[in-house]
Image 1 (spheres, rainbow, N blue to C red):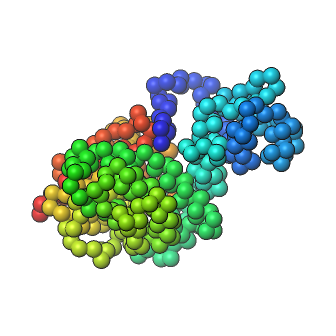
Image 2 (cartoon, one colour):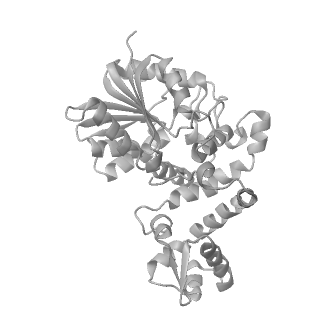
Length: 366
């Protein structure tokens, strides 16, 4: 996603009293934005060229006084513009916060509001115990023999679909970047068999298939996720090139050894403990052809672990949700791959484009 999470707090914002107070109050900023999106304030602003408070109140089914409070918030952060007592969305708000925009991130915001925001209120508890907030997870056997992670979060089918749509939103652009990297490394003129382990809602596989016409992709995830992904693939007209299969990515799947040119692991490794990472990489090595390419997509920390802000926040997020998950630095990810029979490792940082970083490696012999 363009410019996602690319604010450089260390380089562009002063370490000052004002910044500290902004951080203290930032949960209220987020909640206010969530409220605006929940009542579709920006969608209604987008429907007409200039909207009065009374018109917004009717559209949002709120009182004029309540809408004025939301509009005041939007004005204060520059997301709403006022001219002659008529109100307009800023261009970025119109693009990202109106459901009428094809680039909107409303499902991602809804996911944060419903699912992530409440969990972060228990971050200190998780840090003190060293455990995830397991009472919000419904794992069938203490996570030792099951890999039911996101798919068995305590959500209705509707909530799960919100979650999967949000994951696809967060993944927008990552598949295109991976495809560019793969084309430069292994070429795209000849047919490529690609295995996507933990492909979630299918966004990354879809983008790769669109960018590399010769690619045939097998995507593996839990049944709930693959049902969602299969529908997304069908809507894109790619069902003949992307197969969405249910399975446990940490177990040995009924796939032929050394049958794939590329194995993709996108936003998965950092969610799990070291033992699970080793299992997944061993399976990856098994599925790859000799000299085949592993593509890992993660949002990487700097080697000094001092930022950027997005992967630092994601490390705290996986602290709440998983046992032992933590975001990688480029150095630590390279060490993990080289220690698990991969070589010729190449790191591509995609921060300027706002999407996850890409790391490519080759299957080493032996």
